Image (cartoon, rainbow, N blue to C red; front, side):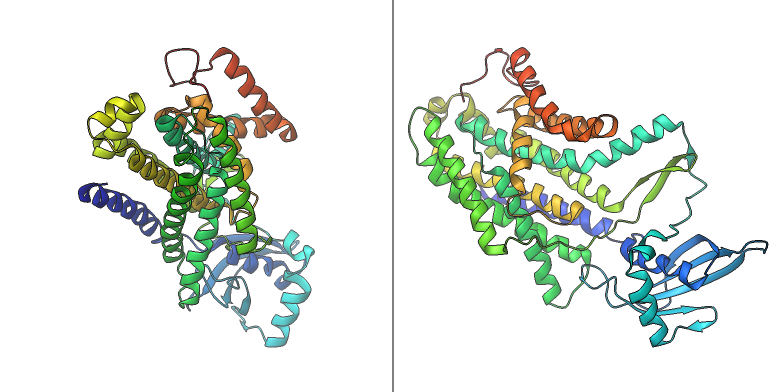
Length: 451
């Protein structure tokens, strides 16, 4: 890339970081700490019906203040409060460890706190008796069917972003070279491992800020994904000059297995999970007792995916890299006559595709907590289906296909047996290839490029 394009790429990465920093300011209280603090209320008020009125930050650092009503039979409700102190905050693994508890009657003694934690809060009974927080009564009332459908759509947003970014990785490589790299699922796992490593570096440096942790994880994921994809793609795609695409396809299968085993050895078979962050639900609407909600981390992951998609479309339309990519994808020989360096362009495209795949891995960690060394295979397979449905080789088509697959999975899981969801997706791909083999936004010719 030229220096101006490199500057634009770093500006784009800064936009992603800025979104996380902006979203990290002023978010609600930690949901995991709130659950632990709420779980103590039934034990403090045996036999009472608990209604949580308000949850807010406490007077001291790493503390919560919960105002609630305790209603005993044949007695008026009592307005009470509790202040819970915790060992840490943010990304720290022991942030849900309760270290102190006080009520309007004063602080709980050390012995009482020990008994409360180990013989109630940490037991299945304590978890089951969590009274929850009162639903916000000021939200819009909508019909039950609309509320359920809206909730399912909101839940699908992170999944569609993940599939879309992975599908774009397939489209970038196939559109340029006519070859498929089957290792992108494992590159997403590389991105997730790098995200956890970046967050761990922040933790070992003494910081617990989720914003800084995810920012470090994002940078680590983009770098690791680009490097692994460029190096792996160089040996499995760029160096294999056979006219047939089959040798390269088989080589990428080997790369996929290599990355899977490589991750197993590097990060161990045990998946490292980040603690949940920014997961306190925001109420949006309701239908009776059913509350439609959205968590801050869902907004962040979906927003990062949207910005990445828009940035990639701009990159392909408005930069010299994008023009060279489109020219070489159209006619490689003519593009070479006009000065496009095909091998160098392929390495840049491999790095960009790997960064997109790793970004999807980072979103998986941010939204769901982690991804195992073998967990990327299923994501990669479904993203390949999304790329084919959208029109293999078409970047807007890959984004549309990712949205379609994510929405299909959500709708099927909401209304039909979830155990048959993947079978239905693969069967739908077969039907789609029969009637629309070129994809939604693929080539006009109904017969796709040979794979």
